[in-house]
Amino acid sequence: MDVVLVDENNQVIGVAEKLEAHQKGLLHRAFSIFVFNNAGELLIQRRNPAKYHSGGFWSNTVCSHPAPGESLTDAVHRRLVEEMGFDCAFKEIGAFQYRVDLDHQITENEYDYIFVGYYDGKVEPNPSEVSEYHWIEMDKLKKDIEKSPDKYTYWFKKILNKNLLRVKK
Image (cartoon, rainbow, N blue to C red; front, side, top):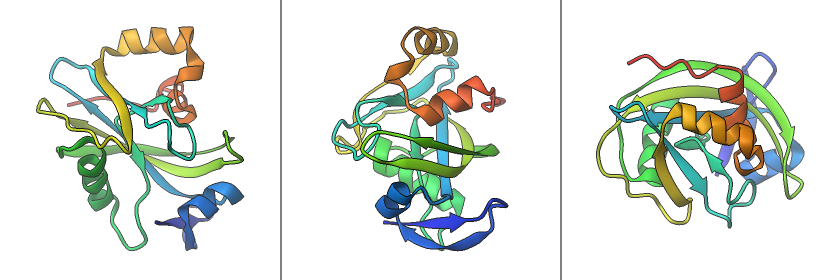
């Protein structure tokens, strides 16, 4: 899969293969989806341990990249279905840029759009993407992140720690 490369102002400057972009630390577009149920619990997933970075870590509902020429809206709908086996309405609530060196000589350098959705139906995760999932109350999640930060992905913690997740139905 190719990703969309951008400059510091989020202007498109090219395309690169996803693994290459992560190995070279090239700034590219990404998105993070947070899906809540009517009880206010967040759907989190544990990334498949075989993923080429951050495998086995807990993270937000879905995180991925829009393909070149694909709208963010289409990409979010596509990845919700591909990873978690459902689709739902959502809205964009913001974006931020971050850079971090991860395992396996991978550098995440992303302009990350944040989306929030609501869903109460059946979840059917793709086992090649997700090894576990569950719904969790935000207070319980934040306490667990404080107690065991090393089991969560960097971007997930960053979004929560910077209060970038503003949830309004």
